[in-house]
Image (cartoon, rainbow, N blue to C red):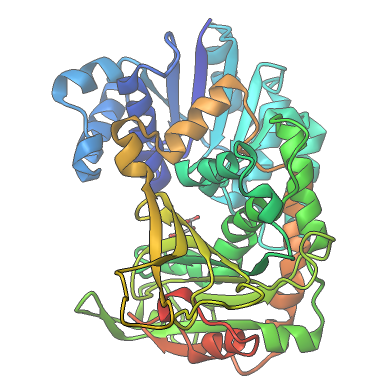
Length: 485
Ligand code: BG6
């Protein structure tokens, strides 16, 4: 009967900022299966009613369009329950087991929105309390470990107590409508596939730029850095989506098998290639959108002599027949000039010019991920009639598709989509353990190199596009980052 969703970390930031609003949106859209219970778990002593009130107050901080009216909240609140638990205490899991067994829901989702250090304990305790039966699905937030060994240790515990199909490792970028559209564009249309290869593509650029700093997460971020926070997961998942072979069908394992092959084909690092092809930066005080902002080392929770990177740009290659020799540039950073994420596919220039074209006039396909979600195909066209000119000069034009405008109100947010997928048991947009381990295996030599390198990250002023070395790196291949074009 229905589902039970147990939300460990039920009073934490992730719960009220992302998960509760997403669950409420699904409820509002009528897509949350009927007859469900949401059981928030945390250490505070609260009644169901007190927890509901707390969530209602927190909704005030959520963007306006996602806030419930009092009437909507009153109906949604009937789903919310609260259980006080100390996650290290076996008897508290017995209490949870009693609560769950009294109802025997078809699906029991255990969402671990807790500190990652608790993942192993919670999974072991869930199993010890007999709560790891076939109806159970466990959702794990990133980061899953801080290096390959710690990731493998968590995965080993998971394997001891659950089957892989019961484990939902979230990378919320996979839940973004734009990323699903990327799959749709590549594998739902015949148009691009023949062009999607080294013969026609000169290079591919993936940028995830943020204008925000580390906000309230200084202490966590200082132990993490941009490589672990963004490249190991979100950026590599985008790289997989753009570089993978067409899967044999749309099942989770077929998709994950192809993504895994991309990760296995990434060019291995050595000392020289890391030195040349990986740039790390750290923001200093500057201006973002005209407002002065402090430097990273002045942020709360950050060590004043911190060497943690807030920016990474790197060049890699996928070593297979399709992509051999095509550079893939990945770039991410905090406190950059703007919030924007996109993938830019640069096609090769025509092999023989009969028209005069502006500089850098080759075709480009821009896949916009955020803030807008869309596709933009840059072509060359004959502009205004040039009767007096002997030569035809082509003009860049753009075939621009804005998905937000096209699909507007029907768009489903990343967490809403992923939570509904977990309840329905759809694993397509979740990461398998071997993918995750491969991604750690690939970033580890960089972490290792940085640990030994006393130079530290290169400073860049907040509100810029990162250290100039990132531009120099790409310029060596004769290219430049898109905002500089
Ligand atoms: C998270 C990172 O996974 O993704 C954050 O931990 C980052 O540091 C966030 O800000 C970016 O997500 P989005 O959806 O805002 O691009």
